[in-house]
Image 1 (cartoon, rainbow, N blue to C red):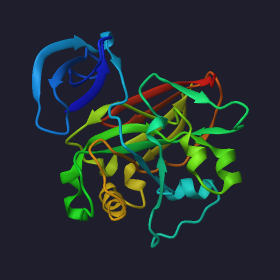
Image 2: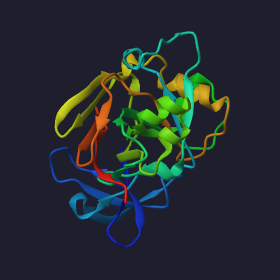
Image 3: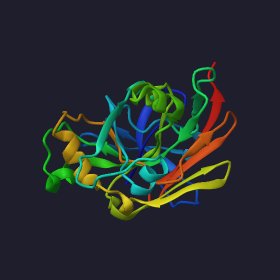
Image 4: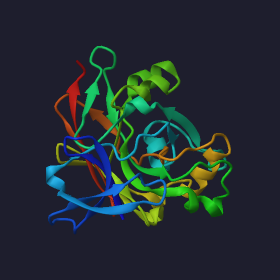
Amino acid sequence: MRIARYTTGDGASFGVVEGEDGGDLTVRRIEGHPFAPFQVTDDVVPLVGARLLAPVLPSKVVAIGRNYAEHAKEMGNEVDPDEPAIVFLKPSTSVVGPNDAVQYPVGVSEQVDFEGELAVVIARLCREVPVERVRDVVLGFTCANDVTARDLQRRENQWGRAKGFDTFCPLGPWVTTDLDPSDLAVTTTVNGELKQAGRTSQMMRSVDELVAHISQAMTLLPGDVILTGTPAGVGPLAVGDEVSVTIEQVGTLTNRVVARG
């Protein structure tokens, strides 16, 4: 099932996306929200007639650093497979949806990078989740771009500001449920040129391990998002660029870069 959050101009709704990729997709509104039992209604609109929004509005975005060995290497970092994953937070105000602008903070940063990632969406309140029960608390998966002001990250030696600018966490286009995330292709293009091509099977720690690890430290709420790390190939964006992150069996998230006003 593909669950989208969308608007046709009269408020935001959740809906189920129906149809085959490459065909005429529609979205069927649901009563309520996807974090509890819901009813699918007869209110159907063509997807081209709706504006897709960020599929969830998380209380927090919990992100993982250096979860792909080749990416760690390209950034000049060594990774110890016995060490826990690096965990950092992106604020909820960094979240935007498909086709929303990524705002380049001109005059503040001189290098803003893309980082395509698989994102996990949490289904229910949970804490201290055992690895074997992680799938019970996961709603599904979506595409993410962990946009990063790389120069600030290097200079400040911590990641909060570099990762936390408004619009620095595009999510979408929807949440795909009932999906095995263990070996999915992750690609990123900029202006149509392939920049990243990896697979989730290359992650040093699996989705289940990451959710269990994070939930040992903090309570996760319905709609919270976990970014699972990025494969090798990250690089800079410029104002005017169009960046797309595609996850196999999920979809494609596209955003254009504009100068922050």
